[in-house]
Length: 442
Image 1: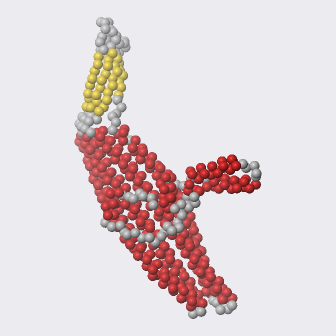
Image 2: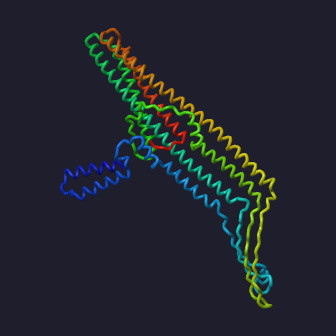
Image 3: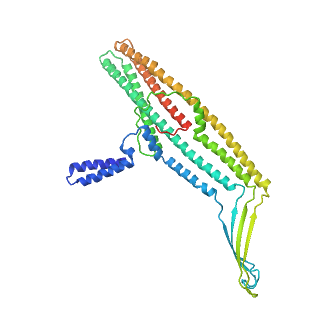
């Protein structure tokens, strides 16, 4: 679609500059098409999208989310039928027809019958089925909410990783440019007989190793861009400028665990699963109560040898009896009990796992912030001073060429470590928000 818009735009420019036959109406119609296309696909006309815009776009266009919305709608449609009665049955029959001479006139017992019957479940079976269907619908809604949260978390993590990769490329290019200047100076010095050819060879090796790192980072950038397009469900680009800003928040306190227990979609689904298991157990117990089937039939009799015969009406009620309780109902009730207990145990296990992960993420926030401040406040400034000192000594011939390169590599490592600490900090924030069930788009 982006290529279509660009092609149309270039064609307008070409025709407007080379042909006087293009009328104002044609221009207006063409630009109207461009406007409509841009409105339908805003991400294609506005360039790279900031993270909030990207999240909104993904929540609207991700195909998996669309499929899960359809699944939730399907689950909602099942609630009404779950509480509905079975279809009534209509019975058509011919009663007591003589086998030797089939007719409806010679025998007093012969009749034509039409009847209707309706099964009515007793013991609260319909309400139990409706309750189970309602719980399944709520589970589908929670799965949708959980997928939304997971999508936002994955999108943010990918955007932070992309910002880190692009920042690393800038840092590498900066260090690489400094190494290039030193190499050029050393080459000039070696030509005049004052430099070291061995140092030039080693420095070029370091320079080539940086090219190798840049190739790997470029490949990683491509992978992340494709992943963001996949998550967003469209041909979009992420703007990463300023995304890894050194802004730190107060680590979540004791209220985080309560918020997770209340709002985490996975835990909510498991609580609903426990409620569903309890509903299934209630349904199994209600099946011990017999159902009743009401029937009404009308029998029409033709006139016979003795004259006119009266028509007849019959009514009946039939019940099913749970006579096979020990081999059928009891095992089903025991199975439902075990399902309920299993759901409770699985909930406890998953709750402990999620809370432990949340505590680990909170500890990670404190550690990443401390690392970033350590790098930026102490290690990187000291490394920069060490580099300046090494360069000054190198220019005066007091130190060889390679210690300067080693100092540059050390500074490169610390700058990337500081950027990585920022990336991990923001990624941990995104994970904590997903665990706590926050759906707000930034």
